[in-house]
Image 1 (cartoon, helix red, strand yellow):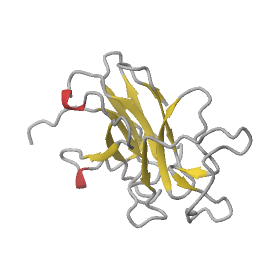
Image 2 (image 1 turned 180 degrees about the vertical axis):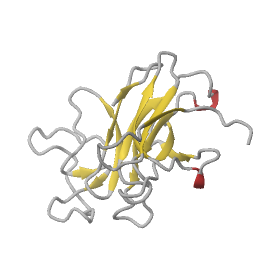
Image 3 (image 1 turned 90 degrees about the vertical axis):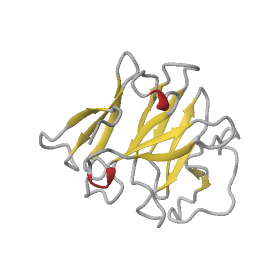
Image 4 (image 1 turned 135 degrees about the vertical axis):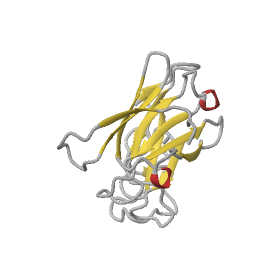
Length: 190
């Protein structure tokens, strides 16, 4: 989770999905994001979690409160042929000065673009929209194979002036000393 340092102090919540969808929500008091009626913006059936039903409730089970759809969602590659990643990792709205073309965009990631055993973490960026889901694109990394980290993404950090950092590891589990912290910067000369 992270708060936006500028503009409205919005709370952004990354939520790893059950099987089919990864999502990010805007957080606010009393919000019901639909679990286990919905996964992302799609209907969910706990008895058949690999298929989204055509219809479902649009209110909660107990309080009959409206279900809130995410601002970002993308398909999980484990169970969908057009899937992007395996587990969303929350980031921050960029408010730094060194990347002005990213100002106001949400920079976040995914644990790995492939299987959990393959270290292929993604950096992603989303453009906020007022009424629709935010548009998501992959950030490519200069001088890296396929433009990807080649490591698992663990998390993101933000310094006092709004510059962003990505935390990575080469290991699937909490072992070893392969962790690294990278500052997200403008590409340099080749």
